[in-house]
Structure formats: structure tokens, C-alpha cells
Amino acid sequence: MEAPSSGIDVSKDKLIVYFQGKLYEFTNDRQGFEEIRKILPKGCKVGIESTGVYHVNLAKYLNNEYDVRIINPFILKKFKGFRGKKSDKNDAKKLAEIVVSMGSEFVTSDARELTSQWDFTTRSIARVKNRLRRDLVLLGYSSLSKRNLEEVLRGGGDSIVMSEVRFLLEELERLEGRKREIEDRLRELVPKDSLIFTIPGIGKTLGCIILARVGDVKRFSDKKRFVAYCGLDPVVESSGKSVITRGISKRGDAVLRRAFYLAALTAIKVNPVIKRFYEEHKGRLRGRKLIIACARKLAIITWAVLYYNKPFDASE
Image (cartoon, rainbow, N blue to C red):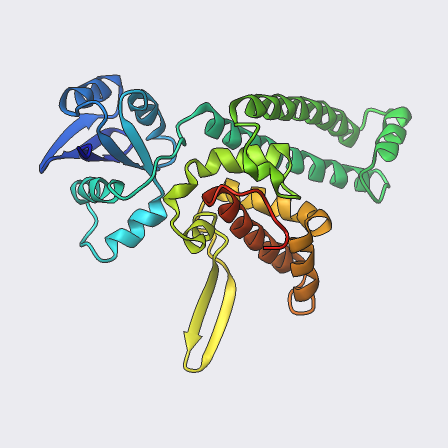
């Protein structure tokens, strides 16, 4: 017997629940979560739109007893386009309708939360390094390197810039330590035998991040949907006989998109398929656009490996 489905529209303060033709309103807190448990039978499919951080505690609370599906806002937005006006009540009903055909996704797991922390920490490290480069230029150095930093620190001094350099180096050490902790924990939570690790260019860390963000790849019935979820789908505009590609949509999962971009930087050197793709397109595309195109190709390969459960094969 097919499990019943429910949709929950989440906002900062309230929860609108649609179940079997009825609407309920509860507070977005522990008391509201308990009220939801009273009306939904165990095993029920529950669709919740991903809304910043406001849905996370609810999803974690329900995850043990219900089949919780986190719906990407982009999917719901497309659904709204042909199903009427937006409202909290309508959204709850639409979520219940969508969830019937959606696969499961472990977005509420510790693994996914760690990927968000990893992304924040990685971007923080980049900002600190950029600031250090700026400070070294002010001190007469052309680049950020270990040698230059050691020379600056040996010179000493109590200038305002030197004080910031010392502070930034301490901050950088702290952030890099945290990044290593997150990566170690991720490797413990994500299956080590996943076929994603057969794809050259996708190492242990980025492989774990991609797996944690994707969840159940069976949700994506074709490669185009997967690429769109990653935000790597091209934006194409047509006017008369002209067709113009204007970059990528960036409407999908930003962490997943960055993970594929970083993986592509390695894949163009070690993955025969991506390397060949890079060589074939470098005359038409350059710089970041070419790397993004390689990232999109790598995402398609990843989808195929995981969806069909077959190891990477460069001949296919």
C-alpha cells in the first residue's frame, strides 16, 4: 500500500501542513513539531521546501519516523508556474503533490550540515589569504608565499599592517585546522565504497561533499535535471534565428556547484574524458567559462556513474 503524503510550508515562525485534503497551522518550534506527529501517521511521505535554515530542525525531528523529502525551491518555483498563485496554503498542497514522485534525500543528515560548514570555512580561508596578499603588497612584496611571510615575520615591527598580518596568520591556522576536522568527519559519514571515487578528478573530500549534497541520485531521472540541480545548466536565449548562451543559471545547489568546479580543475589534468573535452573546447571557450563547461561535463559523468551504478569507464 502506497504511503500517504503530506506537504509542509515552512517560514520563520509558522508551519502550514497539508494532509489528506485538510490544512493545519502550527508554530515552528518543538511544540509545533509534536502537534504534527499527532496528525501524520508513521511512514508518511513529507515534503518540505528548503528554506534557508528554518526547515532544518523540523526535518531532523521528523526524519526518524517519516520519509522526509527536502524540495529544492527551484523545483517548487517551476511547479507554481502552472499550478496557480503562490500562498502558504497552496505551497503546502503543492509540496504534498510533488513529494509523491520525488526520491529520498538525506539533506538533514550530519553529512550535509558538515558540507555547509566546509564551504563556509573554505571561503573564509580564501578571504583571509586575499587580505594577506593585500598586506604583503603594502609591505613591499609582490606575492603571498611562505618565504615572503617568513621574511616579513623575521623583520618584526609593530606597524598596523604587521599587527594585522600576525592576526590573519593565527586566523588562517585556526580555519585550516577546522577544515581538516570537517573533512575527517565527512569521510566517516559518507560510504567509502561509493563508485563516485572511481571518477578521476573527484578525490575523497570533494567526493564526500558531492554525495552528501546529492543524496539519492535516483531523484533525477535524467542528466539534465541533475545538471540543473547543480546550477550548472546553461541559460539559453533565442531571438529569431539567433540562439545565445548567457552563462549558467546558478539556481541550483551552490555548494554542489563549487565542488564540481574545484573537481574540474583537477579532472582536466587526470581524467581522460574531461581532458579531451577541455582540449576540444579551449579554442571556443576560455578561462572560467571553460572550467564551468568541464564541471558540467563532470557532473553528467557523476550522474551516470551513480544512477546506473557502474564504475567510471573512459571508453563509454
